[in-house]
Length: 270
Length: 175
Image (cartoon, rainbow over all chains, first blue to last red; front, side, top):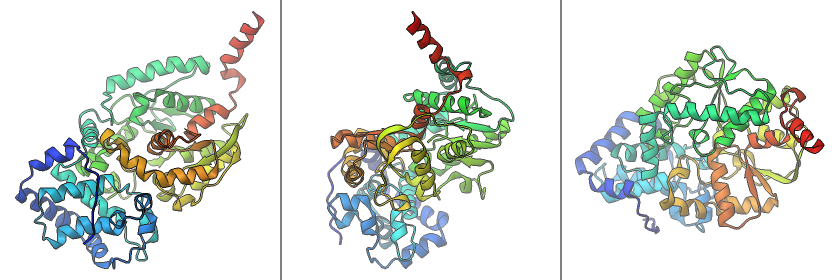
């Protein structure tokens, strides 16, 4: 068995929500995700892996924590998915807390390990399956869940409602004119070439980035626009939570905004 | 499952979907944006997983940097073999309880960037940008991080017809 030593972290999203779980709920969610949502691909990956450990050196956590084997990608899969399968989905709340920590905080889904796997196993995908299970059980880091909730409520990542968004862009246009003569931030221009869709931080803390984009668009003479209605935000934190229902809703809002404006292409934020 | 398009039953996104790196690259390539001056000092880049490993835009970032900076220093490993910044997939948003995991895990990234000796890091991703900035403070490195848009705003040529500042400064000088 792999020795797992971790610094304890108190995160109410994980600790408090894990207390509310019942054994039937855990078993039901794991059975649903592993047997209904992820079929052949998951089974192939789990059955093909021969534990060779060639993925280990690809992981920056493994390298940064002095080659501690419990941080290697194969160990992360072994401690989560294989653990569930071996115990026939009957796991306790403490294990769910460990799965949440490994899949949310100790993997960046960067896919570097998949590049060094001799079988091409997509380990990052396996971690998103674990995130999906933890997300459905509600055992999620609190700050991340808060942003997922923000997507449900305001269709933006950081609680920026639609009226705030329009207001922010209007005063940014005023400031833009200090640098660019007759600079414009055009809203709802139907049939424009490009729809720019910002990160919601650009409407909250880092507004200078939106001004920078507006400067570039004005100087390069691009025919651009932004939606004044919901669907302007290009981020999607619900995807990272594992809440794919909200993720789908946010993405559909986003593309529908572009369809409504009849633009040719969407440019997202950096 | 990586993106919402397939969850919604679309094989591909219904509208062309460009990352800004590619858009800026095309603006410079097509001559719509002219570069007037170059950034001084050694510059290096960060390859965000989302646009380099998953969409292969590493060379576009480098072309923009070569066009706008005097000295470009390559990182090792580079392109799709580059390390993650330790903030991807939402880890940047976990708040104070989890900051230590980004700072400790980012040791690899920081060593790699310091080995180039660069003073400016170009990170075309919000997560990479913020976390590398925090890493620089944590490890007391002498660097700072910039977006590509910031780079372009500082170096691009603003046509005479769109300038506001030039006239004002001239008036102040005359006074």
